[in-house]
Image (cartoon, rainbow over all chains, first blue to last red; front, side, top):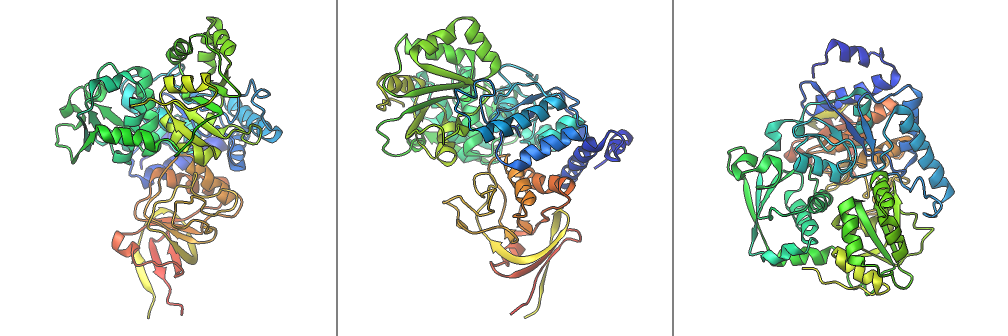
Length: 416
Length: 143
């Protein structure tokens, strides 16, 4: 891979030790994956933000200690905890301490304290065709597919290196030819009224991820009225059942205004049909078997948006959460400020809903909360829930989640 | 019997020697391998319960979350990493952890790729020499 004189000087340490290390990593990754050069990115979203292992704290701290500074606008994925309401979140002291170390290191390097997995909702939003370097699977799929920005599925640690240098090796989804769809997915005999229930979108995303794996697929037959929250849920689901960095929705997403456009005028390598019974089957597979009652409703995976809070308030209609059910919604600090300042937060808390920022429901401190089973409107949460939290999980529509909560946790499901 | 020499494509440079641990299934280092012990802890995986530490870990390709790179860095940090990795196809997420660890901890996990027909010759327990700098794997003829 060719490095310019300036890039070579950074490699040689003229911009400090952190930049030299970061440049070494970019050069090696670029050389292995056939990049000819580095290209500038306008912004970075860092995924390496959740405390999981000590190497994560170690890397962020030492890069900051070595003088690492982010040279492009950089946003942060969720912390392991709500960094503001950590007491209400019953955060164990060691988890709080490690999360604070990570927070301090990133803020020292100049990151924006966004702490959200939905940087595309509030924050540093890229335009069509913009070259960016994002971590976090749902955000990558959304940025590439819905916004038409260009990012690879950046690994943890690589995201930090990209933010320090402000460049990435040019390969993969940064290049037009690799954004061509290979698989065409067609919806067969799906009744139009099914799309009135927005729970269909995460289920379809989940199916696309299973079919596509790590290739680019295009799906035909999604109605044009799909809301942004549907595109978000679809992206998150596709990126959890498959290694999906980019999908195309024909006549909806920007690189797929026509079928020919997303296949770049070549025929699909494979055509796959999805029938209605496969959608019903996928919706069933997203739930653990035989869960009659739940004591946690977990929404906000990915973080809830202002329109989703509006839907929730409309469905709750002033009713209170029943029994001992905890009703949690995770969101960003900016969406939180909006719902607080317009009075929506008070209506939610009056109903018994708890809104957390910064954190991730898949990483809640299980030792502090003794839940038996969870319910969610997120296919991503449902697919990772058991492996990450040990809880059985029921997947349902937002309306199902609300009715279950109001009835004290007895599961109500009416989806699809 | 004699040694078998296979030509390999280097991904992450370095050399290693040790016993092969072979799986025909992809491996995710996030959710698939316990970052504190180095054991495969995905109950659905055919190597469930086995330790990857010090092994030449042989599997077709990686899968899963982009956090896998951080988990590999942790395994290097606590000296529980595989001695080397042999794939058919290595994706960027799998290569990132070993590349970062070389510069950050001064130790790495060499990775090479083999053609599918050569990959199939390796069996669990065989003694392997991996040279990811010159690009070869040697299956040693040790009785």
